[in-house]
Image (tube, rainbow, N blue to C red; front, side, top):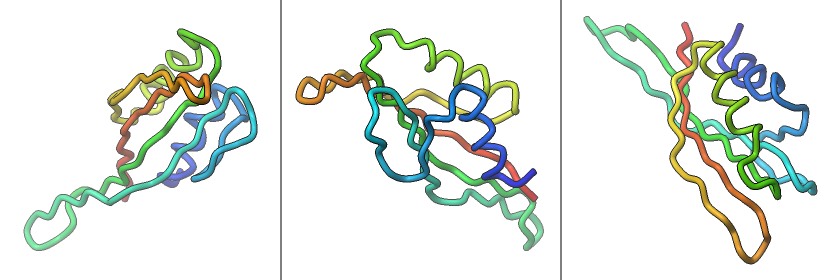
Length: 106
C-alpha cells in the first residue's frame, strides 16, 4: 500500500466526506494535504522515508466523534500522528481540528 493509499484509508474508515487539498461545501468534512518528506539518511543512502502531512476536520458538531474515530484509524494503520489544534472559528461556526501525521514508505 502506498503512503497516500494508507492516509486515504485512514480518512475513509471514518467517512467519505474527505478532500485532498480543498474545502468542501459541507458542514462536516476532512481535508488532508501532504507536506514535506522526512528521509533518514544512513551510510549515504535513504534508510527510512516518511511522507508528512496535515489533516483538518471542519465540523459544526461540538466534541465531534469523528475526531476520536480518525485518531483510532491512524493508530490501527500504524500512522504516527499528533493533534496540533482544536479551535472554534466564530466567523464560520466551525470547530476546526488539526493533525500532523507521518506515513513511512519504501
